Image (tube, rainbow, N blue to C red; front, side, top):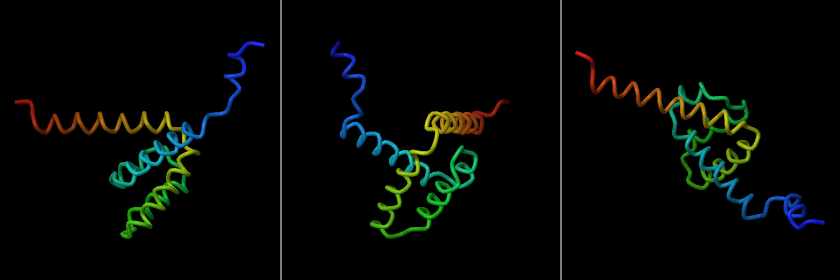
Length: 106
């Protein structure tokens, strides 16, 4: 039996799971800070959309922290690759639009 076979079967470490959960939570916080019309164009589940809307209404720092954790949990059910591609497309579109406003053609 080869050692590399054993390594492939191991589940992710607790540290790795924690890093992934933190990354999902940070992405969720980014979604909360976005304009509602921008998040409406993203491939999000209905519970996630509702959780983001609730986070925008909260003012208590503690409640907002708990809501961010909940959003991170809901992010596990989202196709992160598709979401990041949509966010990148939105960013590119916004940057192009901004450049056109700054440097209009004569």
